[in-house]
Amino acid sequence: MSFSTIEYLSRWKNSFFLIAMVLLWAIASPARAQAAPSSIESDQVPIRPGTKVTIENWQNYKQFMSEGMIALFEGSHFWHMPNDVVIEVGPTTPIPLPERYLQDTRNYAGKVQLVKLPTGGYVPGGYVAGLPFPDPLKGDPSLTGERIFWNSFYRYQPRVQGAPSFTYSIDRAGNMTQTSEAMNVQSQLTFLSDPAIRLSSTSCMNTSRRSAGRCVCRKQRDARRCSAAIM
Image (cartoon, rainbow, N blue to C red; front, side):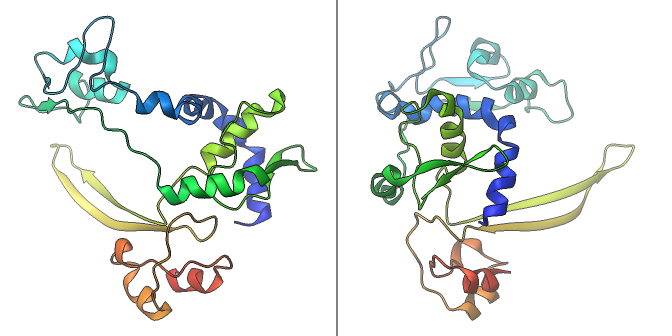
């Protein structure tokens, strides 16, 4: 990632502060998350493993749902839950961060400092990999938001990610026709906390568009060759 890209992002970071504050709970309190019981408790209704949420009883559990899921159950939009939907609640399962990401955090976090740009924003100088600020509340209180933002920006993400996308057209009778299909493949080239997988540039060029999971270029700090192979 170039310096100009980071500088551009820092100018617009204020719009992400609200999201970053929500993430603070998860970042600053991992022990509390790991100690979560195997059921979700509420002042109104507890949800325990084995509970089945259906069209008939979903309103008993709406306090645990996102606005989007509530809309799906309400049936007030084109997309909605089928009448026979059954969602069975499973046990709470903590998902820890990869050990390599945690190790990179331990190795490099102490070397990261916020550097003020001439434009007034801040960037994390000395960042290598992992979480840049494991304790975002520590330090200058006026820069707490900056630390939370950059923790969110450099959160763990897989080395290669693929996501399918589709578009449809709908006629006046409600019939849907698929009009396009694409596979978006994103490959992170720097600040990596995933192990390298050795592949030749030729094989990467031949497979990256078809199978993101099978094509991971060799890890390089200077990733120009890998970038050329994936393009």
